[in-house]
Length: 148
Figure (cartoon, rainbow, N blue to C red):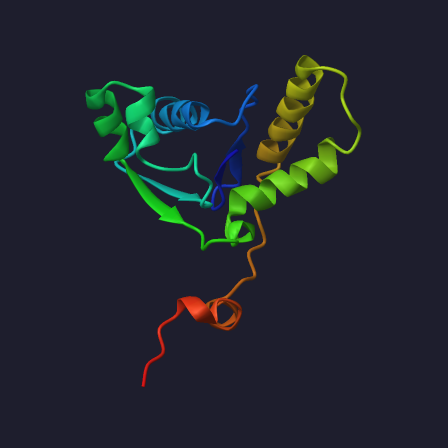
């Protein structure tokens, strides 16, 4: 799931596995297909072991990996804080709205996900983000320094 929350735009890519190489190709797709003229893409991910800049060097030659790595601004949600990742929120919405009934094969799954994505994009559906800095200082207090 690639999600641009302020624009209410998302892209869903269904693949057989969720490996580091798959994620590297998703990043390349985001850069080269979705946002080819952008100077920088701000990327927020959870701390999954496949969400690391080094994976680009596993998937592509050094020159291509370097080109991609320098264009993304990487931000990670806190450990056990993937619920802060808006793409994860959007995946949850997709599961509730489109994937409650098991589908028989991968092609049916892809078709259902694609139809849902088109519908959400056409309606410019956005995440209603209500987690404030004040909430963060309470919920994530162990991550904030104590000022004496």
